[in-house]
Length: 191
Image: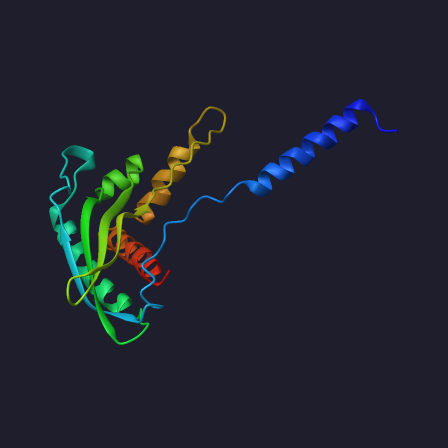
């Protein structure tokens, strides 16, 4: 004979197991799936809204970096999206950056400022018919933000400064943003 506690534990475990089986997984954002529909990327358009802010002080952003990012991003998008092929029907991929943040090297090293890109993507055929669209595609390059202490000394902050300074060069930040954001879009196109 099983005890009352054991019976309750088994009943509760069974109920939780059954409810977990019926629970649906979180919905994943559907992709453009242009490959299975016989499309290949023929043209890539890149534009940007005026939301790239330029701040003052330690967080100051350099507008020249935004221009450099756009140049690199366009080249990388063209190169990588053209490898997404499912057939001979040409598709046009239009990317509009809606939010760009490239923190300064000092902001990155000293206060662990993150950099990120957010954009909307629309895929059309040559007649202008929308095949797929996705708003808010985001890639974020997070800085190290450790909070450990040793005998009350915030060694995490020291580690952050060293770690973030190693990856704070303009070229490194632009490369990571461009590649990460492009990979998000390429993955979405083929999904």
